[in-house]
Amino acid sequence: MAKRLPLNLPALAGLLFSLFCSAGEAAESRPNILFLLADDMRPDAVSAFGNNRIDTPNIDRLVTEGISFTRATCSNPICVVSRAEILTGRHGWENGIKGFRGNKLEPDNRYWASTLQEAGYETSYVGKWHTSGRPLNAGYSQVAGLFSGGGSKYWKEGQTDWKGFPVTGYRGWIFQNADGRIKYPEMGVGVTPDISSKFADAAISVIEQDHGKPWFCHVNFTAPHDPLFIPPGLDDKYSGADMEVPGNFMPAHPFDHGNFDGRDEELLAWPRTEAAVRDLLRVYYSVIDDMDAQIGRILAALQESGQYENTIIIFASDHGMSCGSHGLRGKQNQYEHTINVPLIVKGPGIAANTSSDAQVYLRELYPTTCDLVGAPIPAAVTAKSFAPVLRGETGKHHDDIFGYFTDTQRMVRDDSGWKLIRYPQIDHWQLFDLNEDPLELRNLADSNEPAHRKRFTHLKGKLENWRNETGDPLTLP
Ligand SMILES: [Ca+2]
Image (tube, rainbow, N blue to C red; front, side, top):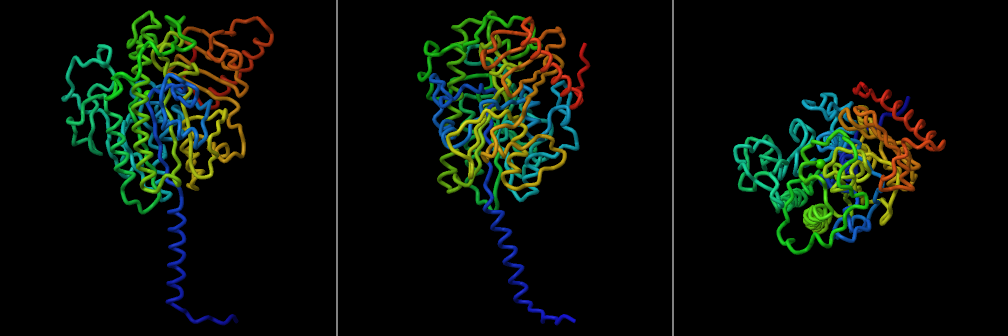
């Protein structure tokens, strides 16, 4: 019979205490996560990516210190659907937000912030909320600088943007407390020229709190979504004459892609002119420039609080924007300028100053961050972690990337750079060879060349398989 050791209560208490402390220390050593999300920002509107018409020194700093993705894709290029994908790690047919009117998030979603909270993270939400429900019901334990609908009684009719166009975006949106019962009209109603500074103030207030545990801070800017205004101090920095129209500028899109009468297509007169696009880019770049400066303030606060090195910093946009490319002004299309997003990830163990052409989705940030910090990924999350790319273990992620918008557009892009877009309502196809034609100007869908026919058939099959596998609710005519 084994000899029973006398119970040493002080020793046992010490053992339990040390176990508790080591678990606590392990939790505290996990990196914080700062997620900075722009709104409607083209992937090429970053000076470090070679755009010499815009000045983005703080985003450039992240580029220098992290990994930039050249083929990060939003999947569905409108705010509500893209943001729902980010929050849930699922695409719209799974999470309930398909992009059609009246959709709500499904109750079986498991939110990004909830998962991190369950893994021991403090979770904060700052900025634009453009999803059903409220942040506190989606896993965030606190809000700061929350900006959402509900301020229509404070809205003044007749407000115009920088160009005198009637404001149609963010009408009646207002800063408010977590449950929306308290509104702050004194901070402005709708988008204001200095709104990015207010989001930065709120983010800094969160960063400067005493944190007893690692934190996740999700910051949603409204920049550079319309309505556009020249931010304070930038009146003379950019001029239309210095702007360069996109290489795929057109006066009009050659066919109805499914959003011809969309709200944001009406923000630029038809037919588009190069002068009008340069004028648009002047203010669009000014707004991004200002957001960049506000990001600089946030990064400085992170640095001054000693948390910079142990924070995973992610910069992205919910989708891109046309700004005159292909004769379009708005989003809601499958071209590279819009379906792709700027995406930069920096943090402990992530190689600095590198770029990756791995095909990744925005909604994969959720499982990717869980993977990086050791948080379990819920089964409901179907998006796939690309942490192996961030760790330098592989350069590939998806062989094929798919895009969708209402019942008017479906898209597949393979890893070799071939892309097929389907417009089912008008029975139209586009086939692009992005290696030879990165601006998507030569549609090869009707080419009789055998190699092109083969590509077309191959990609069409992939698109059909994906639609069947994911349960596309669209019944094609
Ligand atoms: Ca957006």
